[in-house]
Length: 282
Image (tube, one colour):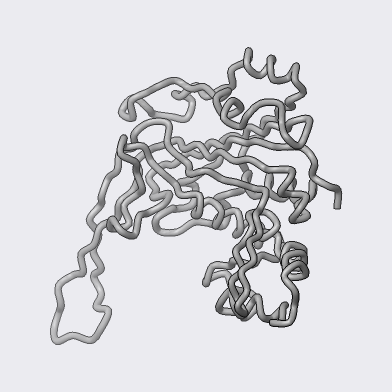
């Protein structure tokens, strides 16, 4: 394992076609939007997908979704207590938790079991993803024509709704902090795992709300600084991405947005030692 010693910023573009990228349970599971009508994916939902991909690749993670439990532990407490005892000291728990679980040394974790309170601050930060234009949300009426329970005669069909985003391109922005990586043991090899997780973010993630092929990682822009601190702020890095401002009704394909990096800004940052890598989703 080689030490991670250079700050990283990255941008991921995601295309959504007739899917619900992240439903809001407090709003009838409608796709999340902000006050301007832009589509939103929470950082929590994005990290969940990254964790799933890490697990699919065979790496041990701490926060497993209920339908992906493969160790028999139905709670975080049981998973924690399988590895640690109340007598273990905090520093030992911190180190062993980071060594054992890839998601802990990536995203961090707050451990509050056995009357302990241990905060692990992870190096990988992910922002909420937002669409480039306001999204059009369609709600489809659906019915169930079979009875869920025994009933006298024929009962009326069960009615429901299925909301989805007709089309949208979302931006995921993130960074890797080299100082926090040093504390958790996050390595260059872990960076490669994160890259692959982002590239294949929606593989093995299909559902009725997100049918196969309805969500797709299109491009990944990866920026590696020459130092731990970095040569420019993450905000300035993210501002390098430019695209055509369009009304959602004028968008028919990913290419309509003409997404690209500002060549002048890239050249100026390159003179400071910032390295750029361009990748495509699976």
